[in-house]
Length: 168
Image (cartoon, rainbow, N blue to C red; front, side):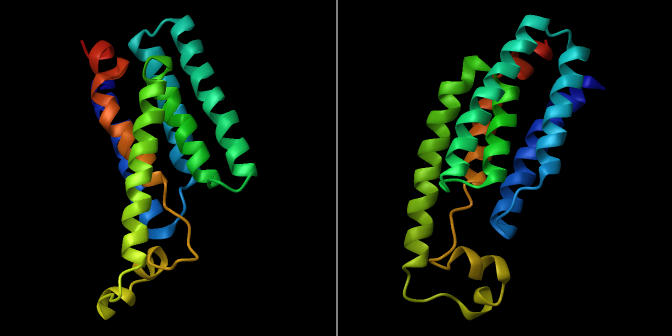
C-alpha cells in the first residue's frame, strides 16, 4: 500500500498544482497539506531515519523562508511559495539545487512562451471565451509559475529517495 502511495501522492499533487495554476492562477493550500502529510506518513512507514526526516524538513523550511521573502516582495504568489517548500520537503537537500535550477529554467521558458503568446496578433475567438485562456493571455496577469515548479519536481522525482530507496 505504501508503494502505491509513493507512486501516486507526489506526482498527482504536482499534476494537480500545475493544472490548477494554469486554469485558475491559484494553487490550493490543500495541495501543500496533502504533500506535507503524505511526506510524514510515508517517511514513517518507509522507515526513513529521523535524521533524514529532519534534513528534509530543514530543506523545506529553508525554501519556505526564501520563497516567503519573495512573496513579500511581490515576486511570486503564496501558492507558489508553499508548493516549492512542500516539494523541497519531499526532495530534500540532495536534490534542492537541481530543483532550483530546473524550476528557474522551466520558469524562464514558461515566461518566454507566455510573453510570446500574449504578444501574438491573433487569438482564436473560441479560446478567448474560455476564462483561463483569456487570463493567461492578459498582459496584466502574472505567470502561473506553479507549472514550472511542478514540472521540475516531476523531473526529479524518479531519482529521489522515494523512487530509488523507499521502493527497493
